[in-house]
Image (tube, rainbow, N blue to C red; front, side, top):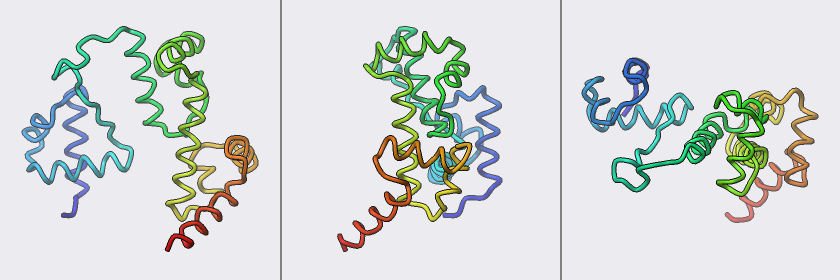
Length: 181
């Protein structure tokens, strides 16, 4: 089933027109798309990072009430997912969440036992590893896509966290894939 650009635009417009808070059923009614068509469009939009889907835990009462700290931590994790390593400063996330970096750090540490910078770096490293393993993008293209100021900073960041250069990591991964054939 091929997804048309007009279907994607219809879904995005419906979400925007309804203050970004729609159930699947409401989206089906609004767009006029059948279940399978809508599922395909939503999947593609998520893959293209144009749509972030959130589960409604309150519906089944599994988490009916969240403290403001829990809600802030959940929103922080959503932003990490959304930016996937493109933003690597606590100040950016604090600004997006309208809190101070100090408060964000305290809340995230309280609810996860880890600091925001640890979460940010882990997310960035996972995204870099994924791109090195599963894309044909050059290392320079990956560095640019993830908003590193230059290739040197990108290489130093990756080596500090993984103990090897991005190029060596990619070669090692490719060689291990051939060894498993």
